[in-house]
Amino acid sequence: MKKHLAEVRKIFAGHICGHLRRRTPQVDKKVYRLCVVIVLILCLGGCLGCGAGGRDFVTERQVATIKEGIIQEYPALLDKSLSDFEKTNLLRDWAYANSVGGGSTFDEHYDWSRSLAQNFVTLTKDFQDLNLSALCGGFAAYCALVYDAFGYEAISFDSGFADNNGATHVVTLCKIWDGEEKWILQDPTFNRAYVDADGVPLDIYEIMTLLKNGQDSQIHYSFGSTAGRYCLYNSLPSNAVLEDPTTISPGTLDYYPCLLGEVKEFGERYGILYDMRQPDVFQIQIQDTLENHLSALGYPPKADYLYLFPLGLYIGNVSDPTTMLEELQAFAVE
Image (cartoon, helix red, strand yellow):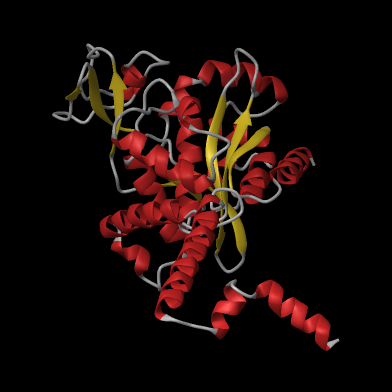
């Protein structure tokens, strides 16, 4: 046994174990350098793995910076006495004002291979640089990413009739605590939430129940405080003035009242600030479609009845969107 141990010691002589028995300043320096190299390799390996299984510290810092900016605009978000509903209203308000309307290029900028946080950072910059414009689907998805950044469970929710002559609308479903868990509807396209006559937020299932019972008059809108959202045009619309929305040609962004004095040039495009908080504009835009579809099914031709026809749950942090969609669809026809 002793002979065997002696042979083992001989094998390691001159290597690290041997050096530890015969330390000199030169050896200490070599060992120190070796340790530094090993630590750097381990750190580099960890950083390279951030995108797969580790933490993405770069994106975390970028998200934190954006959140700091949002909180500076809405310091009430730090008020512990503020309810979840009030906070999600403020976050929807910010998402509304900091997204850009126009022809939708959202699908060109959203990358399914990226994390929600990475998409949040990228889309925020693209909106700020006016490289990205969206319609209701993009607005709802972006709002869900804002909620995700602040720790809320949320997802974009599409409903309506998906044929060529149909009408759909996409909003954001967000889970809050309001004495109980509620999946509320937040609509970042029109900067509004759905509430009862007392201003209490309505759960999606409560909304569906009211609609199935023909009690749409009990569904009310709570609009945000921010009036304007920029919409981009390649040429300046001829009727870029404040008008009654019912007098403007349907099917165009001009259907929404402009805010006078807010037309700006962005390179070769024009940005016009619109107030999208109009309770009846969307209704007027799709009235013919609603008459054809909803009336044939025995429902009043009102846009809110689109929520009885869930189509999809797309972008958000819900763990099982397929099951959730199936539950919504089943509830709608009960």
